[in-house]
Image (cartoon, rainbow, N blue to C red; front, side):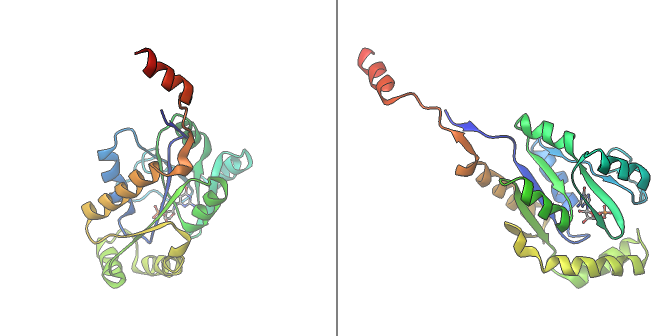
Length: 212
Ligand code: 5GP
């Protein structure tokens, strides 16, 4: 009876180590049809990352070619490297009614806000910043200096939380994922997402009742 619009575009941001990727992985386990967009980046591949699964790792030259060919919905320079969201992969899925997750930084989120009026913006907040940094240093995938440098950028980002629709504090992955899931469920019922009610006319309904 109700005609729904395209799939939901869900934009997730938050500081490094806040648990964005783990929350998305949990969401994808629960919703097999959901799609996590794979960004393109010029940064180096890290640890166990796989090209084409975690990111499309490309040279700066190739990234700029993609910018010029208008292949991104948005792109930004984050921590001095390029990151961009491939356009066709996301738009095709949204058109098919598939929900799409984007894990991107605030510059990207603000650009998406201009283009997709019905997108949902969720900010993932760590419960305690000092513990977060200590954990990142211990994890040892980047140097202490690099982590502290990222933290400075992230700290500015945290103060921009009010540009998002929702803030989810991640002190427990399951609780945080449940909250994101509840936000998605509620957003799907929003009147903004209803294209038309596609109802029978009043006369048609009365006629059907009278002849039955
Ligand atoms: P990392 O290098 O740690 O994987 O990601 C660094 C930052 O870049 C994170 O804040 C991440 O959300 C952001 N990022 C990843 N992909 C994109 C993208 O396609 N566009 C934008 N604007 N940011 C992205």
